[in-house]
Length: 220
View 1 (tube, rainbow, N blue to C red):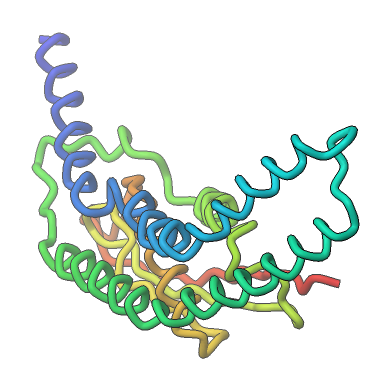
View 2 (cartoon, rainbow, N blue to C red):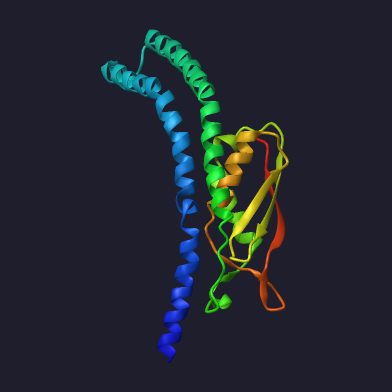
């Protein structure tokens, strides 16, 4: 009998976790690929310039560039840096549309509400904690280009719902008008696939709203 109960509890964990393993399970990887594809495409010439620099350096006495080589290299580098920035800007609208499409897919999946089985043991799920979410968000966002070099502090506010299935949904980001920051932060939030214990009312799971601040300090 104990073994049977163990199997039921284990199957419960698998069924709840599998619900989270749809688009969300690879979301962060997919978002990162959108950015790296653009960087790789726009940075081809910069990579070639680095190869050229290494070739010049190897031929120079004591592996030091002459002033003429430095001047020529700097001129080419500045030109390619401008070209790189223009390429990134040109691809900005494409990047935004890809992020929008990805977010729409996740939000559509969120509408497919998972109804927990009567066999689900709520004690097998971890209690909801904003500290867990905040730490994960900081780890994902800190160091990204969008949050580096800020002129002023950026105070974002995340509003979301912990649904009856234990997943976080309906996130809204306020505190900025920057569309890319909103999309990137929202997708980062949805890439958190943990399933939590939903709040109970009269013994039944209920939807619970939360708000959470995220602050990014300006670079001095």
